[in-house]
Amino acid sequence: MPTVSLLLLLLSAAPTPAPADPKAAVAAVLDDWHRAAAVADEARYFGHFTPDAVYLGTDGTERWTRDQFRAWARPYFAKGKAWNFKARSRNIFFSKDGAVAWFDEALDTTNMGPCRGSGVLVKEGGVWRIAQYNLSLPIPNERLDAVRALITAPAP
Image (cartoon, rainbow, N blue to C red; front, side, top):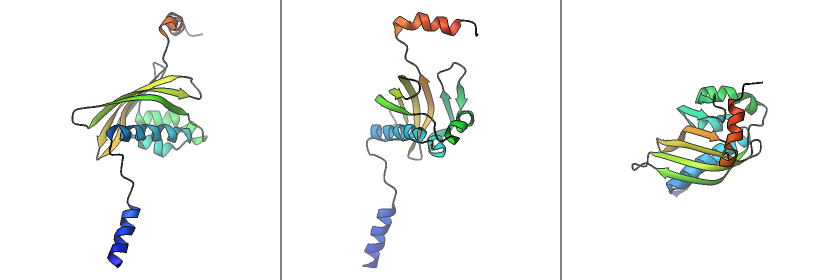
């Protein structure tokens, strides 16, 4: 019987497998990534990126590699308070070979109001990682002229 006990012990210590449904697996990565920011877990948050990932922020100057974004974000994580984004809705799609996923999500945020995120994940060694993320502010079409005037006005 020691063999059975050892087998049961090994099985109980094995990591929980990723969801079998690919959409659920991608959603789980994105949800955990957002949760990691909400609790200021820098290692977990940036661990969801590929080494060559790109993050596009809401400001037109914000195009960062993973490492540049991490350097910019480090003070927020160090204070124990990063940002809190929660997906209100999400659409996920896959390449024919199932190795690439792209998505868009409507976000509720505590600091920016309604936002939109979109991006690409790649499956590396059976793990989904974020290769690109694009955060944007959805602007109603009827307000675009006012926003454009703000963006193109000379800096104060």
